[in-house]
Length: 217
Image (cartoon, rainbow, N blue to C red; front, side, top):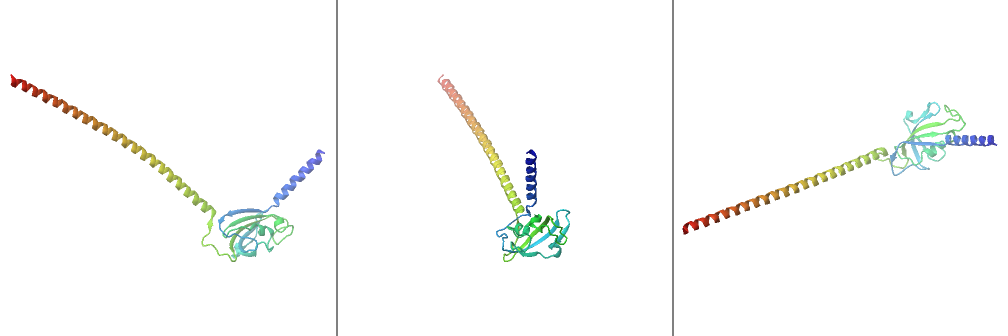
């Protein structure tokens, strides 16, 4: 019984491994922002470079010919990996497709491609027929960096504002303290002057009284 369960477990694991290996890999290497993306039915123009996953050998490349490859997306004119892997793509975007045999040429040998090969395609969308090319391509990484830079600037401005506000508050407090000290000194001096004047008046009055007493004698 244990050997049966072990065999079933191994079979299940192998099946999962095969299914994972048969999945189409789509890696967006150069992301682009756009309003109009590719959809099935579009005639698109694509540059590509194809290599074998097994040894990295190149078997075809439109880049070498200098002319992008044109086809109707989703129309069965190309391998399944392309029909599914190039959907929702922006002009200027680049993707690397990992195409297993079930999405490529299966168990057939096609020219330099051995049967059962997993293929690697580096692709670049050059254009979509009937869709104007953008005046400039907005790369997501550049946009994200610009947003990060703007956010950093805002943070720096906020920090500088806070520091400036703190310094202004400190300066205001010191000015108020100095003003209070100056006011206290003025009051003290005025009081001293008044006190001195009062003493002088007392002296004058006393002298006047002495003179009067002298005259009376």
